[in-house]
Length: 73
Image (cartoon, rainbow, N blue to C red; front, side, top):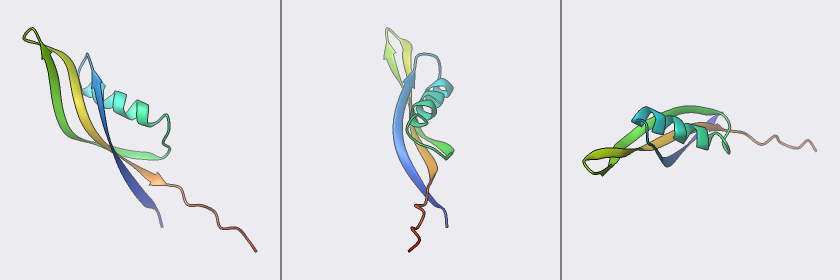
């Protein structure tokens, strides 16, 4: 039986919300295998001088947890 785990991450980009989501996925993939989906829970932006300077996403990333193989006796 497969077990799916969900982690929540925050990422940002100076380009777009889509790029921020890709950054979240890219960074999570450095330490997590078997990623199956990403859900953008929230989006926000940092503003400076009446211009958006950073796009931010709060993302939930799900992945399949590997089962440990049982040792034979």
